[in-house]
Length: 318
Image (tube, rainbow, N blue to C red):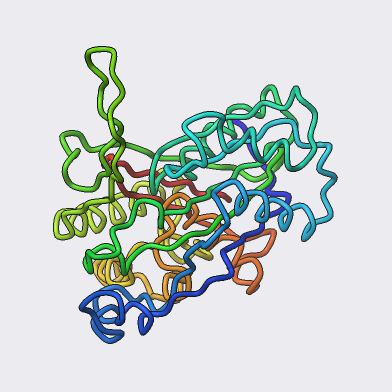
């Protein structure tokens, strides 16, 4: 098992902030309704910054904040479900923007809201062959959000978070899984098959969600993942300094905290500021927690993702 060092982290978001009050003029909703059901007060919606732009900005912050020489990066993994293009990958676009060597390994991972956790697990294993790996979660979910659907448009935001790792002394434990037969619980349809050697019109495929089913799933797997990571590590909750769950909904986190008798102070939550940014959620929160000094170099931290697939995964970094 590879141990890691987290060398640096950073995050970025579009300049365009959209409050709950702004959404009141778009759909039938209210600030109080959104806060009571989700805990979200604000989110950032891109007007001209694409997924690769946000990923690049978050990477620059990670490099600058921790004075890391970008030329030492030899692998880039981007977790996203809203890439700039079908191809090339966002990772390749970021490599070009950073001016890195053409031999840097670059690829994207689509694990939706679990994407960054999966990318981190892959990166850990790649440290047998690569020295320093830049892992990014970046999304422009506004591309696939239906702004006439008040049940989904109030939840999501755009943003990116980045983390740079190398082999080191910090042990990383992981747990991940997937739930089958869930295509119509949280999904966005893809391109249609082309028949008869003819082109077809492409129409927007908006994100759709069965909120109650997703809520129940999230509570179940967040509880299970925390419990499993504690069991694997032979640790008690008192030995965990910070839990960073996917920032989907404040009520989900509060429900699990109460059920497991974990003080809310153990959780780092910034969903009120950024909303649900899918694969960017965990790395944004991690970098935000470091910035606010909730995490230091010797902290014991849980990172947990869950979402479309349905997928989930967690890591414990000791």
